[in-house]
Image (cartoon, rainbow, N blue to C red; front, side, top):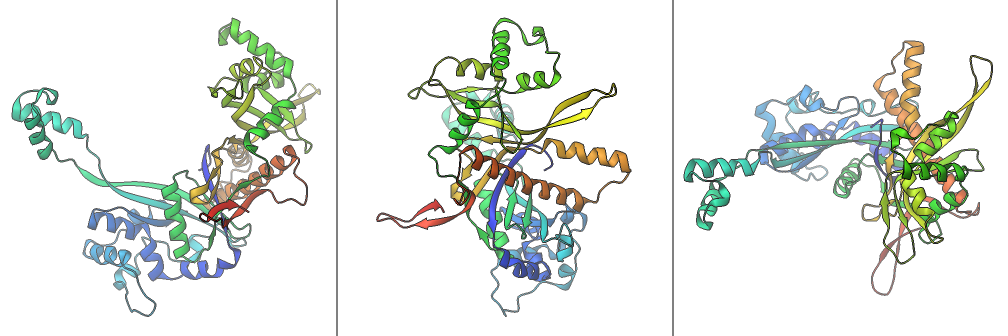
Length: 441
């Protein structure tokens, strides 16, 4: 978190807040859903498991581990379905353990806001040894020759005796729940992991809604990029820099005296001003199609993209990274007015913007470049370091603002009517004669 990454966005029913709060205060529920329990399951049964830790304590289960004598009971409890009133419970020593989150306060980012944060932890039981080297060692020791020079029968014998070292492999991602906005943010593009997190959040009472980006245009992601490119400013400067790139090495290209213009032609191949006064630049990695019938060409350098787009009248942008900027004016030390461009947010725009099977709208290549700088500047000025919940809360707040900015900008670029629904919308089931099909509402 707090840097470039991939985020999955899902809907969250606001009316499920009370059920979620109730679960967070229930030790029997939180113990079973915790990373403390998931780690016990993986160690006890050599199997994959999943659990949660509070946002302030990524490794809380390791800070306050449960005693070895209670590992089996905790693991067995975590994998067993418990019916209401069944009386199934854990030893008091486990319930009282501090190795898992068991109050709303441990997960709430701001006492005045219905914002929550947690770590979703996936534990996989994997072979962590280099089996090829183990096999080679056995071949040398037993048959005094490299494995590739063994006969088929000898290879089979060595393979059967080759045992790796298995251990729990741990991966965890931040999850943010905003009941005020009605959204869940998961820093992952892994469909399986997203599905697992959704199931566990539902077990805690949070009602998750499948969503996706939706605009009433065919191939709307490419349409956005090409409309931006059609309205680009500084076109002559982009072409000039692309021409220089064909004749000189990068280090030999003379930088422009205008620093603002240099930052544009060096980092982008398109720069367009929106009606809201924000600027949107397109950069690589991008895909360019020269003709409707030709396969796309992947490019990284902005100058290469400019060159390709100038080659044919049919050339189109199929995918690219876009950066939203604001133009900031200030008075220099000499009293003269200066301007610079502040990067606000970045996102990749391509046909993978929805993860339909997971019911998630995606922010791929997402970043808030100025947030970290702004926070560090404030720390230097005030000598006051924010609490962990403030870091998380600031990120969630700015993430929500960024999504609204993207939704509004896409509406403007695609000329979406004010009354028409567009943006991140719930999915619904469209019933056809053949079979139900998930579509964007």
